[in-house]
Length: 150
Image 1 (cartoon, one colour):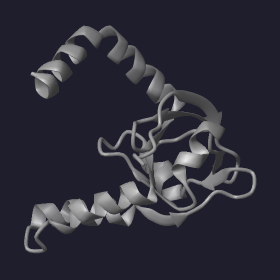
Image 2 (tube, one colour; image 1 turned 30 degrees about the horizontal axis):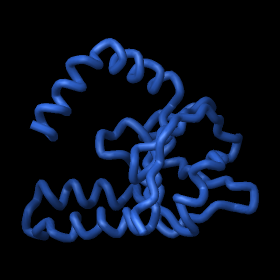
Image 3 (cartoon, one colour; image 1 turned 60 degrees about the vertical axis):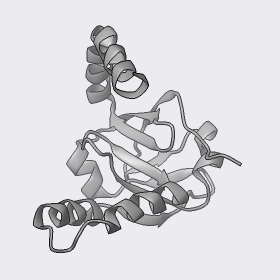
């Protein structure tokens, strides 16, 4: 059986306690336990299913402890990674205040499926990002084709 994948985007909102309802279409693929952290470009919160997070940890474990720059990255990522999360009975999960602050999440958010994980963007930041990508789509698609299919 292959890895579950996430796609689509969904507008949602954070409640006053920093919780969000995970879209129903993502719940099964997300599984029982998952990690809430920052995405690789520091633009959104990322939610990784347990197996995908284990793969991330495996990559991080290859960084030599004597590599100061590499360990700087590891410390940063691990200090804002919250493992062993699960949804409550209403499908909600808490986005830690530290992450909400780093990303600048406001009440209005957008869930975006990124194949093997989920991103949660501030709605206004995502709107701007989406508009830029839409305007540059030919250039972006050419890049992806050349980089990964050439």
